[in-house]
Length: 88
Image (tube, rainbow, N blue to C red; front, side, top):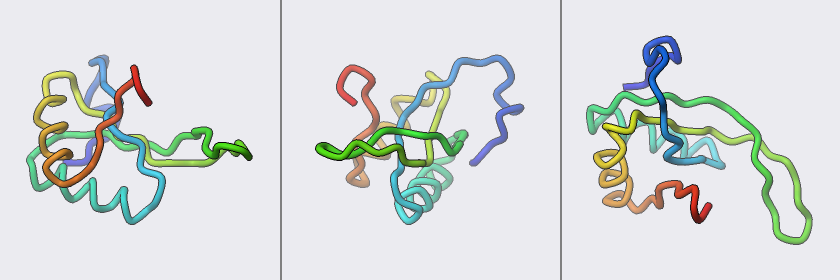
């Protein structure tokens, strides 16, 4: 279920996905909610493009480290590639 940042308090959260389109963000929210996961989603800026680098706004999805494996499995089952900080 989508939660407010206050719900997580001082707990560390892991970035799990950056949705670049609204349709993608809404589908991921539905997937996480149906999976019973608590998550945080916030708009933030990212850099996109290969030749012409531009700054864009996306929906950044975060989960607790404990929920990370469950969230990644649900995402992969639905065809999403979870964010990997070693290979963004």
